Amino acid sequence: MSRHYLLFSVIIIIVMYIPLMLRYEKRVRTRELVLIAVMCSITVLANCFTVYTIPIHAGTALVIITGVALGPEAGLACGCLARFIANFFMGQGIWTPYEMIAWGFLGFFAGCVFSDVKLIGYLDDARQIKREDRILGLRAMLKPLFMVLLSELTVYLICKIKGFNYLGFPLYLAGILGIVLAIIVSKGKIRANSITVSVYTWLSVLVIYGGIMNGVHVISFGELSLNSANSWLLAYTTGLSYDLMHASTAAVCTYFFGESIIRKLRRVQIKYGIRS
Image 1 (tube, rainbow, N blue to C red):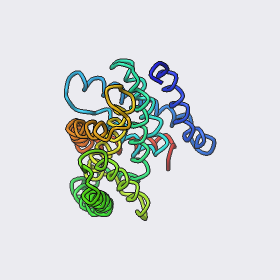
Image 2: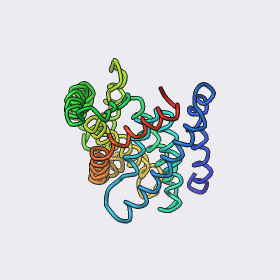
Image 3: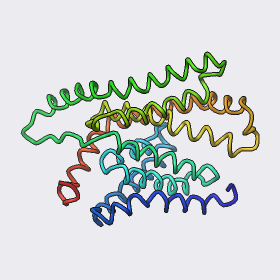
Image 4: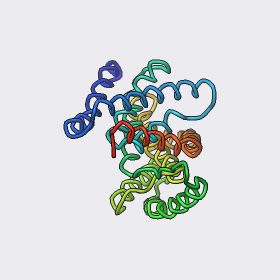
């Protein structure tokens, strides 16, 4: 695959767009595809700009914002295509397909977790509404956070009993399982606001993006042995510091800008009849 990564990347784009195309047959309009294309362009621009100027990950944050605002299929498509285009400026390589998959999953799960943001009218008390919405958001995040912590604790105890190192691959695997369990057991989607989206961003970028990309170093690069437990431990422990930085800076972006962007996208959808 290392010699044909561009072909593999194109195949991934086609596969990732299948859910969106299936939805297109039912209710997706051309104006919605234009909106997704615009978000892809903004994501690429923000990612390339911040990589060379400010050490934050605005592109990752925008992929998640797209998934929250436009739905899981749009988040999947935007993350996959935006990462592919961004790497033409940042450097293509055997890591490109995996980065596309990781960004796509971030956008997809964001669309599965969150419902619409609360709109604020011109005559409404914006501060009061945002304060109440954040309190409700904190309460709504208790169950998902509990599932993630429960999953982490369970895996930690298993590692202690079996004599494994918890700070390697098990930490990431437990986080992914916790997010999946939280989606399964939740009775409804969580309302999107600055608190809930930023918490999701931190968790998902850390365990999903980090879990995928750290594994890529073991699978794709010759200096690490696929069958060696030490190779997996080395890849995940050395990658943890970068994953924490990646997750934290993306969460900061969604905290300060995510809610307002999601609200604007929601108004665009209402104005142009994309959603009621």
